[in-house]
Length: 350
Length: 221
Image (cartoon, rainbow over all chains, first blue to last red; front, side, top):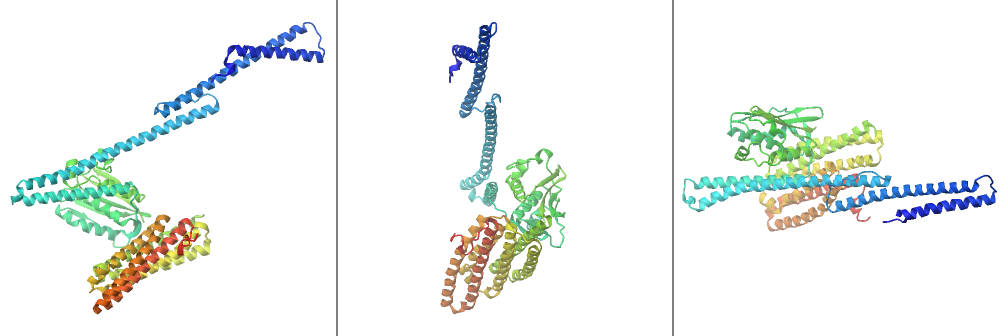
């Protein structure tokens, strides 16, 4: 918006008017207090001229300052227009009057926050898309297998006593796998949406661990794997959600059995520490390469895709384990060496 | 707040959770014994009762010590007052679990009557209420506690229906009069469990929100 002082002519006129006013005031003062001396009129005129120059200088500075602030304000308005249009590459210089500096600084901060939020949302969207792609792929595999076996049976294999039972058995196994996968998916979505409430109770850890090992012993026996579980007879109470921890330990022991060669050994136990216990499951199985260790708790991350599917893994087990342990204000830790074995452990409060 | 006082309060909280854990397990055992007609499981229920009683005494002592030495105020006082009341309710639930376990033997030869009455369905609701009330204390979840209070009416209604059903069965067949009487007693016990769970939930609302909701006090404003 234009100001009347922006005109050069007006500024000269105002400065000249100021000089005339000074001259008149001095004349008035001279008539009240009689002033005498040589060259008085010249002196008064000179004073009025200096006053005119000073007034002109002051007006020039004022107008220059105003123009600069207007320029900064216009930059801010322009930047805000670009932000509202979705352009986040805006970066305002933080100069000018203190208020304008603050506005510029805050605008830059808002742009920075928006950029962070958008990048977070983009990451979430990417994770969601990857997750959906993985889920579709994982669901499709058993469904295609079931379809394949049933189609073959319909096409005549049902009358072939050599294969009909075997095909039905395989279709059944894939349906079981499908069910396990869906259960895991429901579980992980419940955990991640915060729907799952932990029921923390004190319970006797040795008794609890023995009951889990008993349940999995027959599975280990099939591979001639020995489960070593030396636990104290005395009662040791720990705080945790028993059913969720049952899921964690079953999963870890089951994994150890799956990835340990026939005749191997799986150790299950805990170390009694001050105020806590460290529960561990270790094996002398195939181990995990260092490059995979940081990622094994991600959903659908598999060290060896073919092997994982062949042993019936859903790719969600360790992600669920991690979530459950974190809900206990603890952290799952893993140590592993290729060809030598792995150890998974976590702390529980006593 | 000094360290010793903090430790005393934390000790009280931990023992309440330990006692709650025991009672929760004991109730689970009692209903499983009734379902499986398992007399061995009833022995475990009686054994657990001794441990529950020990916790009752221990909590009483802790409360006495805190009151006498520390004179707590505000939220700390509410914790101590709630602990006194919850301790009492949990101990009573333990007693009722024993009473239910005592019905296992007389009802052992009448599985069909037990099945038709669907007493375990009512037991599940009451047991869930106890379980959730302990959770609401551990998580200081007043919302959950309020939801538990609403469940009490469901159990009361179930009790009325099942009572009517057992009476009708007894009228039809004199042979089921004796097990029927045991069933009615067991129904009453389950109804009491729901009442105790509701009381614990009300204590949790008092502890967390400093509001009294017992006897529908909240409705009266």
